[in-house]
Image (tube, rainbow, N blue to C red; front, side, top):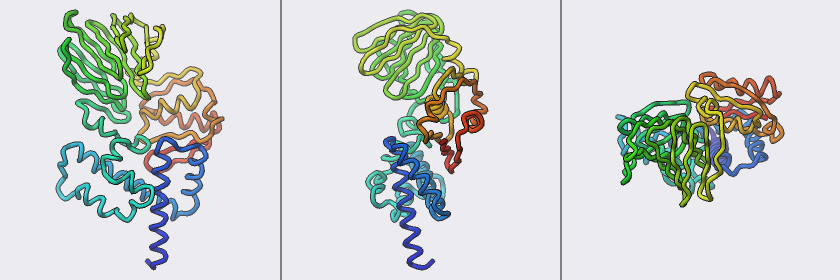
Length: 326
């Protein structure tokens, strides 16, 4: 490769990494996402630079997993230090600061393409599309939904876990004097003999009682939920109790997602919890289109087909499981 061409390749690689850092920052505007797509489609060289940038993210994922596992490396695999040394030329400009350490990226992974460090270090965790049931205490089982992380905790009142992120369905059969406790955000939920669902994300915790009764304490406020009742809370306070349809809340346990007159943007946000990559709606008007749908988790990709065939969306599939809808 001639020297001028070599410099052009390096320039495109740096641009690709800068773009990837921007669109995965969580602050990118729709306009910037469109500019990024236009940049990627400019030529095959631009597309190749984008694929190379994704390769670097994936290398960092491997290093991050090894770091979380205590630094154990597979035989013959380069260490995280070596990974950075080999790619030092790419980590310039805006990316260099953000990628100074592996931890900076595994703590806030781009587009949710791999679990954050808190998930990897949790006692129990699931990845995109995975569900599992574990015995978290005597007479207590927890069914973890997709992208969920749970830690064991020691409390004076009994056995406990902390829901770090995601969703969990708890079935408890404890004595009244030794209830089971779930910590989440600024609150705690106590149960003796009950079934309930808890979901945590975006600074909000939602608790749904499915059977029996659960007690919730949050910032000095206490209340009790009966079957088919639900509340949400955050650091700013707790909502009033509402009555819900338990079948919709627990649809994921039956392998389903159920939407009734929901905006596409909200449907996509839910689908992204299960999608091994990221679906991005580039058109605000498209995102506001409302749909009613029943989606099987085993066929989660049907939401893309629906958006294309029913809503007339244009679909662009990118490497790394990234899908653009416009």
